[in-house]
Structure formats: structure tokens, C-alpha cells
Amino acid sequence: MFVDDQLVVITFDDCYNLDMTLSRIMIPALKKFREVVDSHPDTLTFEQWKDILNTMIAGFEETLKDLPDEKKVEKGLHLFSKHYSHLWM
Image (cartoon, rainbow, N blue to C red; front, side, top):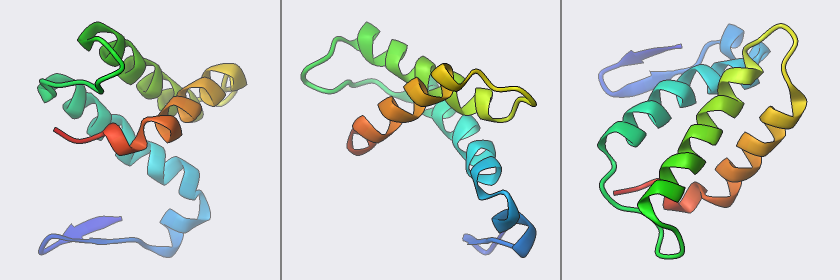
């Protein structure tokens, strides 16, 4: 994968393990989002939102391990899908 003039180019190798490719994208993206976000969903406190973001990050990080903890992965990805529409500022 590489970025060329603001276009992300996905290679065959990226698709071979797309789950790993997406995790490698999402981990730094979620970490940066956590660092700069200054709002939270209406139903959560800011602290709860940060905890949810941390759990999402931990889930994606777990997917890159040789022997991932499937419960951590499932919890993080569940929260990611549940709060996908809240990932904006």
C-alpha cells in the first residue's frame, strides 16, 4: 500500500491479508483521533469515549499478534462497528 497524490493505492499483497492491512491503517488513525478529538457522542462522557477508543485500538493491535486474544479482538471490533459513525470531530 502507498499514497500517491492523495490516492491510496492497494496492492495485491495488501489484499492477501486485508485484515492485517486494515489494522495497520486503523491503529495509527485511531491513536491520532484519540489524541486530537475534543468531543464525544451525546450518550457518553468524554472519559467513556476515550475508554472506548482505547478498547478499539487494543482490539486492532491484538489482531497483529501471532496468537491474538480473540475476546479482545471481538470486543474492540464490536465497539468499532458500533461507533463507526461517531468517528468524526
